[in-house]
Length: 160
Image: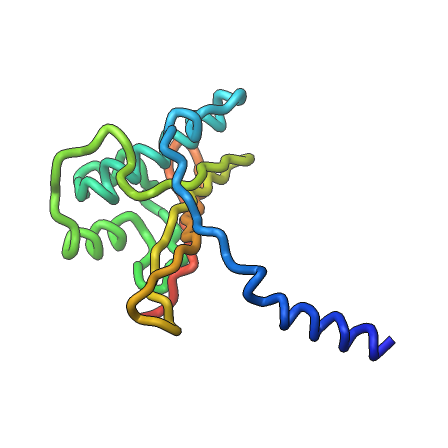
C-alpha cells in the first residue's frame, strides 16, 4: 500500500510540468452571462452587474443607495460594513467617470442561485518565480440580494 502511494506521489511530482495551468479567459458576451430562464435570477444578476458598472467602476457613489441596503454587510477585511462605510472608503479612491454600457473588468462568469450572485473575473498577477512573467487566476465577488438590494458581500481579499 505504501509503495503504491509513494509511486503515485512520485508520478504526480514528475508530471508537474505536464499539469501546467490553462489561462483564465474572459467571456466577451455579457448578455449571455446575464441571461437566465428564471426572471428573479436574471434581475439579481442585472442588479449586481449594474452596481459594478455604475458604482464600483464608474465611481458614482451617489448611486450607492440605489443598489446597497443601508445595513449592507461587508466581509472584505479592508472595507467597513454598512452602506455608509462602503461609500466612505470608495469615495476616497474612486473618481467619478462616465458609466460604461458594460462591465470593463474581464468577466469570466456571472452565476446566480437563490439570493446569491457571483461575479468571477480574470486576475493577472506577477509570477513569483519570474518577475518578467505574469499568470492568470480567478477573482470573485459574491453578493446576497435582499428586497431588491445588495445586502451582503464576500471576496477573497486579505488585510494589506
